[in-house]
Length: 257
Image (cartoon, rainbow, N blue to C red; front, side, top):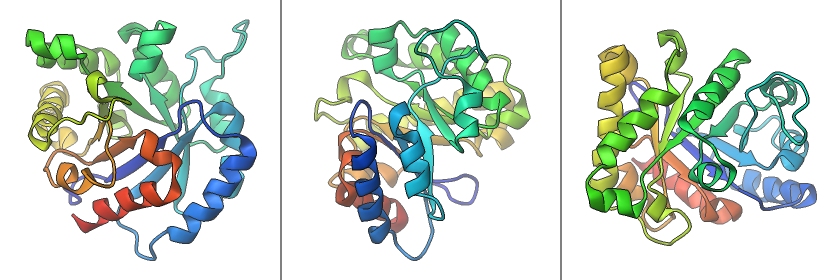
C-alpha cells in the first residue's frame, strides 16, 4: 500500500447472501467494532434487495455502501435490471463491475464491462472493476496478456480525470471461493503490472493514484502479508466479508501496514 498517493479500500462482496433484516444486524455488530482512528476506507457491497437497509444502517458511519452490479442503460424495457441512476438515488457510492461470476454465469463481456463503467462514472459512482485469469490461462502463460486486455477494455474512452474514481480489483478466478490464495509475490506481480498498464494509458501521475485491490480468498490470516506489498491497496473480500469480526480483522490488518 502507498497511502501517500492513493486510498486503501477494503470492500466486502456479499454476493447472493443476507436478507434486509440480516443486513441491519450485520451493520449494528460491525459498527460496534469500528476503530476510532480512520486509516482505510471500508465498503460493503450488498445485493440490490439489501441496499436500502444497508444505507439506513450505515448512515452516519464511515462505511460506504456499494452494489454488486448495474445495467448500462438509463431506463427501458430491461426486466430485472437496475440502472446507475437508481443506485445513485439510493446513496450508493460504489458498484462492482465485471466480477468473474458475472462473466462466467451471466454473459458479461469486456464490452459490457466498459459500458457499465461509463454508466457508473456518469452518475458519480465509483466502479470496482474486476479482472483476473483462470487457472488454465495462468498455466498457459497468458495471464498478463489477458489482464492488459481486460484493463484496457474496461477503461476505453474513460477520461483521465475520471480514472482515479475507478478501483481495479485483481481476482484470480482460481482463487475465488476455493480457499486457494495467490502468494503475495504472485498478487503483487499482477497488481504492479496493472498499474504499469494504467501508466501506459494515462501517465505516471494518474497511475500512482489508482487504488488496486487483491481479491481471491483474502482472509484475516493472510491479509497483512498481501497488503504489505506496494501495489496492493486493499482487498475485495468474499466469504470473510459475511462475518463482522472477520471483515474487521482485515480492516485492522490494513490499518497496521
